[in-house]
Length: 421
Ligand code: ADP
Picture 1 (cartoon, protein in one colour):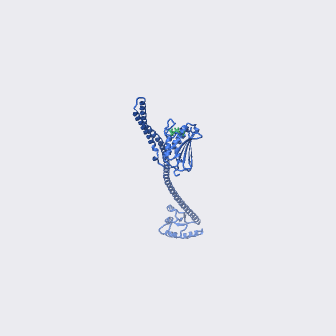
Picture 2 (tube, rainbow, N blue to C red; picture 1 turned 90 degrees about the vertical axis):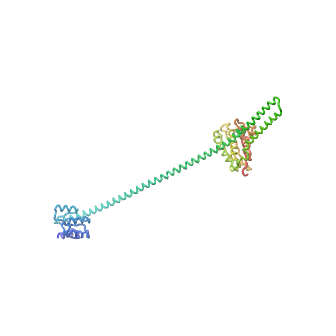
Picture 3 (cartoon, rainbow, N blue to C red; picture 1 turned 120 degrees about the horizontal axis):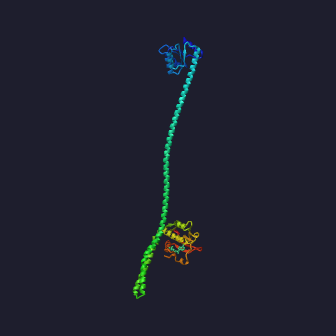
């Protein structure tokens, strides 16, 4: 009866009633199909389960608010009912106003609970997403850091290799420069030595070997002189004179032998550019000239024909002429110390090298003698340089001449035939 009254009251206040059930089991079945917004539950029911137990099941299975209705208000029943979290508790008999308030409040509370739950869920999933995003970010960061470390390592290695390569290139370049410098020093040393050793060898062996016949000549001449002042045997004098002649011949032979190495069969002829020879010599004497404040000017003709000859011997000739010129200008005022080396080509295809200086020139009386062996006007001179130059140039089928320049100073001119006239 009460149930029907309630249904009527509920419909009156604008709600529809999905079902009325006598037992808890029936109620659960009805709820399963109808899914109502609210359940009004009598605590006392027919069947196995009472209202509190049924409400407890509803709570566990469905998210539907329950309002209890009971005539009892014993403490123990209320305590049990409280545990199931009801939305309201109506005491019978229920008046419409109380019912309306309880239903409206429960529906509103259930709705806001659902919204809250929904919001909480949304918040949770947002938090979860956030956590996932953070995790992904952390992983990306880690990955990035790892890659940065790896890349840094790689770069470090490449950097080190690059550095090593650069150092190697620098070292190689330095070594190459050193080697070049060494080669140049060597070349200069050899050129110096070849000149110095040729001359000093000549001088030493000449002095040594000539000493013997000269001493013999001296001894014999003195003996002959002594004999002439007293009683003498012409036969003995003849023998002495013959000895003197023999010693003289020996001395002459020695001189010839010493000059032999400069003869044709010892040449090592090859195709040569005269301008290169001049440049070689210029490089060789440049420092000495600087120290002596002598300017050396080169005027080298273009497109000179090649000549054929022995490089070292021709270098010796040029070196000798330039050193003589340096000796000659050293006495002049420092702003007048000049040497000029010119190369020109003759019409007959020959090549000429001129070495001129601003020195005092060659005295007229010496001009015809300077190419003679042992002719020197220098205190420490050997007088062999120009005679060797003449021999070398003549073995190269060339000519050498010396003259004084009208403007002052000496000029030596060498003419050599072209390789392919
Ligand atoms: P040395 O230089 O040992 O004297 P050389 O045969 O080279 O032997 O020279 C012979 C001489 O020729 C020199 O002593 C010098 O009198 C003269 N002479 C050579 N070159 C010049 C020059 N450029 N100017 C003036 N005199 C020179």
